[in-house]
Length: 246
Image (cartoon, rainbow, N blue to C red; front, side):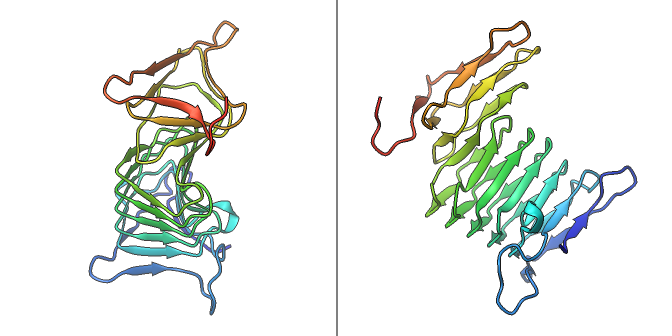
């Protein structure tokens, strides 16, 4: 598939993208008479791209070929703001491998997922609008820790943050947003370094059937810690059911 690649994965493969459409929207889209999701491979930022890259007042649409999404941040942290990111065949934005891009004031619309966070990524996700995405507007691996702040969710299926189960082995904080987290698989917290999972006051965690949260293990080296202090805002652990059943 065709895509735009900024930087590479080898020292010396430096690159930077400055796409500021403040005085006239910049559009990245498919070359089709009738657009279809997944036609092209998106904008891809790799390890040696410059973190000072800026995407502002853009439309990025109909990407997703290769499972990458409309925008892909791999070990790179550009600023993405004031843009419409939509109609991807999978992710509007995919963050991978310890990245922390700033994502603010965007609209994620008509994707499978608006944002996907994997491999200990920690983007700043603030004041965005997620609407009409086919599945979770934000999907994250348990070891990621997005910094959520005042995002708006509507007409997604569901309006919630999805969490894939895995073992957390580094200190991780899950922050509160305006919708609950849905825990889709077993989440463990353990490792030689005694990792801590910290839950921000006010969080609501909804668990799928048979899923649980495990702190530590039964073997030497499986140390873990949970900090869940709801003194300034109750933290809720409950079922992910419309009508709750024991």
